[in-house]
Figure 1 (cartoon, rainbow, N blue to C red):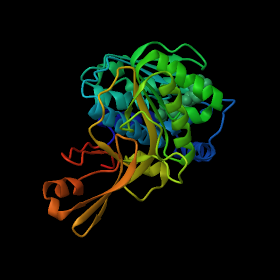
Figure 2 (figure 1 turned 90 degrees about the vertical axis):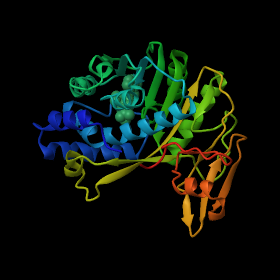
Figure 3 (figure 1 turned 120 degrees about the vertical axis):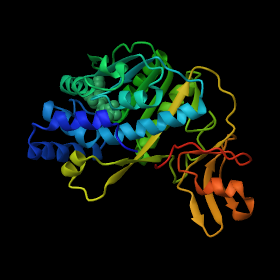
Figure 4 (figure 1 turned 135 degrees about the vertical axis):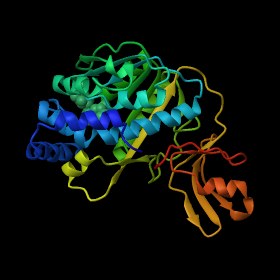
Length: 335
Ligand SMILES: C[S@@+](CC[C@H](N)C(=O)[O-])C[C@H]1O[C@@H](n2cnc3c(N)ncnc32)[C@H](O)[C@@H]1O
């Protein structure tokens, strides 16, 4: 996936006057902090350079993760047409940009809530020349949670929970779900990120919401209690700015993420399973680990003799869906 051209251009412009050295020092500090998730008593982003470093180094990856999660949601809920979005702990607006990429046809009204004024200021500047009118007119509001969350068709909580104490995480998910018709919670694709998503999922199902993605069911996660954890990956092509900052040789990065999307509207039972790993392609055989609508996890083997199904399985992606009888794929995985 490429970052939207308007976002890539505004990121370049917004960081052009800053010293690369200063940005790198800030990136190093942020990397170290985010490697040890835990409650932050003070905002982790402290000032304009931190906000710029975050936007240049993390925002493309979090944008890619949220975009992949929302694309999978749009596949599962083809009628979903949010007009209003509230991005909780939105920082520089990665999730708002991702929502505009997936729901640009309907999105009209965007509000980003965050405690760090410099992140909101930068988000406002980044969105000033966005192609999307909804992004250009975003309401950037300084708020420290716990606080009231305005009602919206879609509420995103992206890469926020790890900065809060466990009880504050539950409270934020509860308040976000109370405000939204559909709520998406996204976290890093680490074992502890998955645990936070499982806790958020419990809050959402306790509130009577229905799980839309990635799970094809609202029952308990079949991976709980195993050594495995549900996560996905989104491949982002690095911009020149990103490469300079990370001193990176590779032209892309793979962001691992875990997520849950739930909705107030009851859902028809899912017809497809979720692909939980990169499909393994062997000679004449594709192997896929699937989470099924009956909440079981099983390995599926599709052989060359299965013709169309085999051809579809060869194109299947981690994070996409697989209907054993009528293969239908969505682009939820690395692309
Ligand atoms: C890792 S950043 C994620 C930013 C953005 N959502 C993204 O996906 O790129 C976490 C954000 O949550 C915000 N945040 C954390 N705790 C908060 C609180 N108690 N009140 C308001 N914002 C908070 C931080 O200021 C920061 O901008």
